[in-house]
Length: 375
Image (cartoon, rainbow, N blue to C red; front, top):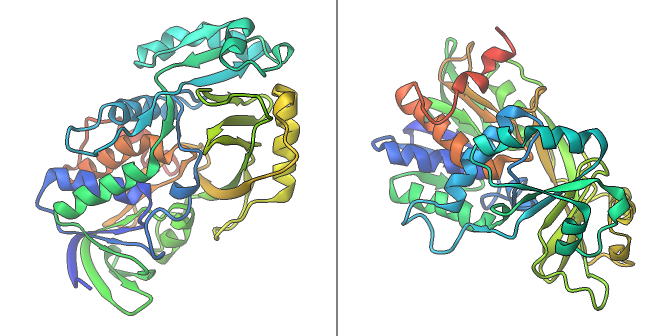
């Protein structure tokens, strides 16, 4: 393994891959990416719902998603061979105060460049006929959103990063962070290899808090939460191809076409320690119960398959990006929650800019820094 580098990235999911890509656009940096698993993106990246959803109650996340959407819809000409986004649309069902709040905030949403319209219940049903109209007052229709090709995005980040000199190592678990006084100067792997570097980037996803402790870095309450998804066959005679991604936060459920069937999630967020998480039978049952409130005709008798992933949140649900104030050389790129894929074009660039030049024009980095926890 390489004995020295400019930047060592700990984690080969979408966060680490996007950072490696954007560091390559700056040129000149020797980057080493270390991933503990035998392949990249095995955990949260590979188990997401793969959707661009430019709506969020957290202002910073909404802005990050909108900025990420611009890249995903129109990536650089040589970035990938196939489209990253299928613009199948996003339909957000709302009622009561939430419906009124969104109606009042549409101008703010459009000011961010998000294309959207408000639909009444009849118009929403024309797009998804099985919806139970009395369950919602109206819907937000985002026609430019939809399903993402996560594999194409991840592999394109990594392919371009390698072309520009990034060295990747799989099955390379970081066991220790090497320090010289307060400054972090390298990592030691479980196999005993030591890589010295000017920057150590913590892009370890659900394990980010553990990596932070290896560095004795500023403690941040990054907590992984399980999200369960099930795949099932639609009822006979119900054509689901062409349906948008349908979400109803108030009922805690979303569903969308997937692999010739439908996927559904109860939008569960159960906190737990980082591990190779498995789907929970109770949450699958809860997903079908909630689906029955919104679209009772879709509730199946059998599950084709199910999976789960860990979505890791900071206390304010905003990602953590920046150098650690008590451990110079240790850089956080963590806490992306459930939107790490759709925000990766922005967060990867912000992190790369800060490492390469100390500043960025991609986003207000102070809103992402650790200083908000320890002013």
